[in-house]
Length: 112
Length: 113
Image (cartoon, rainbow over all chains, first blue to last red; front, side, top):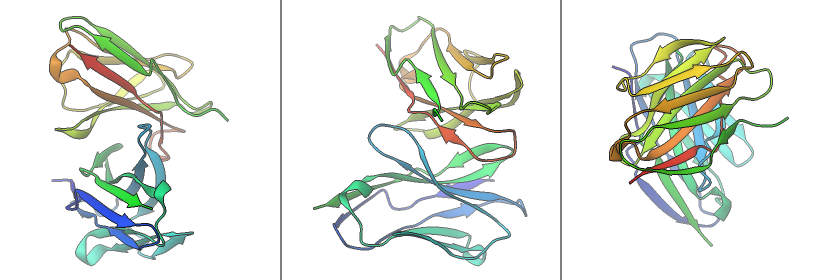
């Protein structure tokens, strides 16, 4: 079965702390894509990253970084020096026959 | 360029009524997908349209339907509304099927009373 698990329901940090959001996936496909989306209170899902299963290189984009490990079926997301504007719900997702399968999301609250 | 536009933003309907939600994709995008988001079930895929044809459908009852027009705009319809249909309905557009470059709209929040 295709499944995405985000075990952390809610994380609270103080501004400037680093925080890692965990994502574990299950798939029988040999080729697949993984995504991270951010959902601020406005409701829109904001695309953060897409990674295909052939590319295990870690990626860094500003304060954001992603650690993809096929051996543990994980695609973790780290925010360095968190800011209040990072407060949102973050979703990890897997693509399966052109439809996104989402995890349950992790609510991140960053306090000043 | 303009993003994905969903109208209306908020909607309140009575049980048993029907509702139509609209989604205008990014200009040039031909694929439109719909998702339902509820606190209990999370984000779930409803259906996908490409070139006016439904390509993919999620596990929802027949009360949920949709269509896509020649200009790629899409509508979804829910008939005989139930309280459990209260949700945020999100639309996503992508250039073509399989490009996986999904851009989401801000959603329509439907409340059924």
